Image (tube, rainbow, N blue to C red):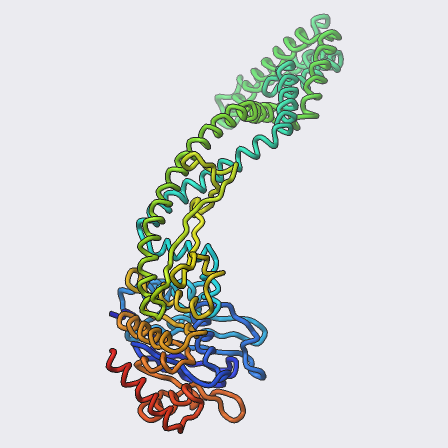
Length: 580
């Protein structure tokens, strides 16, 4: 059951196409036409709708931009529909509208369900909606990485489960290896840094600075340098406040204030305002006495001490040497020492860290090897089943004696992981190198398809692979661009038959030049150029009845009106209908 259908595409100013609408059927649609008529633009247009690279060379000469619009019917439970709605797109009665614009300057814009979206989102949706296969995809199948990916896709959870665990372990191992490499290659730099830190910490430890000591010593030095002047000033101030012992008749501030207080006390009861002033005068008298006493004590304590001044200056010089190197004040020096001690502990622990990381790397390497073996076993098992299924499909594609197999092997690498006593290379997908082999006939040795398959054989292998996938990991829509290249006769008929079979469970669109393939289609579209070499709205038509017979005749013999070709075309259509 098809869960999504590409219903229609409108193409404007793309290549030879001026303005054309391509209407597709849910089943098997064949796109035909003369060479150079623009059939491949259908594939190119769908590629743009699905996030393909925007090439400004595709824009029709004289046009400012090329526009491709598509309408896809999708079910609410389809993951692509949910992803589109999460991006803010709106579904129009179960239909998803996609638009892609490519300017002649190379700028590209994408719209999904009426909302502007990143082109990358279209690529994400493509994985769930359409499988596009063209000549470049056939070449892609020649790459071992693509063959490994195809095998993993076929294996399903048997590979994806251990592969997820392997990927996690692989990333951790890579991080460990990088950290170890950094620690070992930077050993000399770390040793130099540790020596500098030790020197600094030892220098600070010898001085043993106290918090705030620099401020205290600065104040003390200032006092000691001006001790005589300070003592003389304190004595003079004391005498002014409390009188001089050698001059008992002298007038001092304390005596004068006391006399003023007594004068006020005598009359304070007569006026509250004067009583308040008397109170304040009493407070002044007490304050003067306190200050005078403190001045006397200060003067007695203070004396010039050249030895103490020298010791203070020496200590300050030691502290200044620290602040010149490690911070603007003693607090900053203490902070540097704390941070330096922590860093030194870290550096001194690097050797221990190297040992720990080495042990962890070895443990993780053993774990990775175990996961890699699980992957190899799962791939080997899936490879046998996958190869058997593809071989069976090839028998239905006029390659009855062909045999497909997978070679799952590993490469030796002294820096790799141990697998069964061998040290083999490993990567993000395991240790396996997967290669698809083809023996086209009995007695022929299996050879990599890159070396042993012709163009026609490669087309059929790719189709067989996709038909096998359709039974295990279906995609709603398949688009094939000349998958029948290099094929003719009975093989072409069989390709048409297999595509029709695939169309029973998915939508299939095929760009083809073979009448044997087109005859099996549920709908045939003809792409024609006008006299000026462009494809317009009238240039993409649905062929029915007599028109379809004429096109098949042209494809068979190059002559639409040949009675022999017409008879053969009618025979092909009848055979295809009876086969279905």
